[in-house]
Image (tube, rainbow, N blue to C red):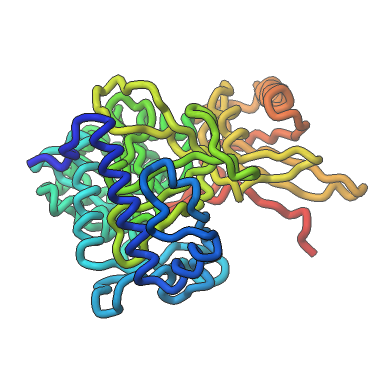
Length: 429
């Protein structure tokens, strides 16, 4: 059984998307008081949407709309048709809660099974799922997709390195599903325990956070050459499983038969050219309980219009490069954390773990300290040269002066979920 789409040409895909867009606008307008008012304020009715060229006429939806509509934002079906809710892992204010009908859950499982198929899994694989369960989307999504695909699910959850290592060895798990931070933590633990020759791990499907090339290399080396697959996903758009990095490792194939992806300039809100970085905006084509119409994800990426080396014709976007709302303003320069870790990923003598610390200097000015680990086994003898090279690279590429502090390998905190890397202390009292 294949979970890949049945359409075979761009014309067929565009026809499917046009029909899905018309259905979504009509469904939302007819069943959601929020969307009816939102569309009316924009001067749009379902009859105005004739094809994909009318997408730009629709208003944007934002996370603030979800928070305002709590606890059942964007609801477009009767409550008796809602069979599950999931919520974001947000740390401030009300969580973003999304409702699901049975068809929504079935569609999500199908998309997730497609991810496993694209990653080259078979029904003989044993999939160790090391992500959060409960109200979060990750655990439920990874597990239900795995079961639909037909592989063996080992639902461990996050953390608990003792159990993770035991299960890797005892059950001979072949695939790990986790955050990249958890994968790094486990790679270091496998090395520390000398387990590499006693486990059978060959693939890692990871997501939930932007991951540098240096971190990917460290995970691959620590786990004996495993193949990594970046999986995007957010609670608002079902959850993880809405696309996957393919075996060519040249971006993310996204499931364009389930949603439309646009890339816009986050300031002007106008579309950017294919290949240019901007903010990802998504519109669902089949989602019943809580459809999305031009939802601003705040994720930064770019469309990749060139044919993929893997041969799959599904469209692609780049791996997520950061978030438009994660921007740091430092000495009148707008900086994204991803720009810093791009420099570090190409710097010699440093590992994958780092922190960005912003703090007042005491004379009315402010300073940025980039604290980064040395590579494993390195001495302090080359610190001055390594730090100077990083300072020069950041100045040349990002146009700001920073201080660089080298610390011992393994001295920065690890996490089994998402790693915190930016510490802004400039406005603390």
